[in-house]
Length: 277
Image (cartoon, rainbow, N blue to C red):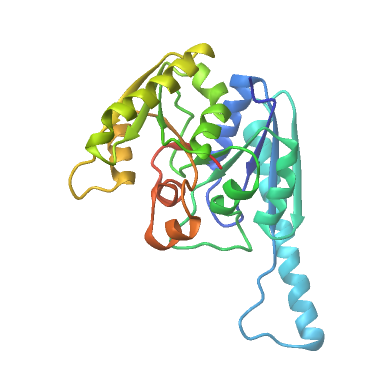
């Protein structure tokens, strides 16, 4: 398995350098084409005028979005052209999430940034929460301060769900290039340790059949520490540059209300995260 085409989703109102760097890394590692995608909509003011003034305001707003899309295309081509065998650009006056989801059919993997907790503008940036749920492709979420795609150590966050199984399959091209792969399950009940070890043994053996050498680790969460924090702690311990995980293993509504691993990974990730649903 490989990645033949990569889509990188650019935001109008957030830094894009890190995700462009990682898209270029993927292009070089896999000889992949890179497709840049961006969209934006004019966001009308709360108190809106009418008549000719309103139309002028709309035209001015749309022209500003078009100028910004032109700037993003220039940034994209400057960052990626020399690193990929082929590049192309797609943009539109549209809602970013809807537009990027439509383009997902053209690629094997999507690259985007983390979702800004303070500012989440549906008119200016595609939401990773929506992309991972609807794209039908793995999503690689890149923190804004990242400088490269570090595959020296990869943590596979395992939970025996369809989402986790799909994520490991989707991540195989990356796992095959990793130096160290650790499959981790956070133990929810001490009496489940033996069953947990058996599950991880199956995953490690399956990876070995695909040429990926991996080890397994069962983790008992520390008192008063949630699963997301425990996962980050293990990732720190093995100096993981990438976490692979299934997205929304239970109700997305529950995660959005109560918080959860997926919510943490798309808003506060400190390393690249590959998510699949």
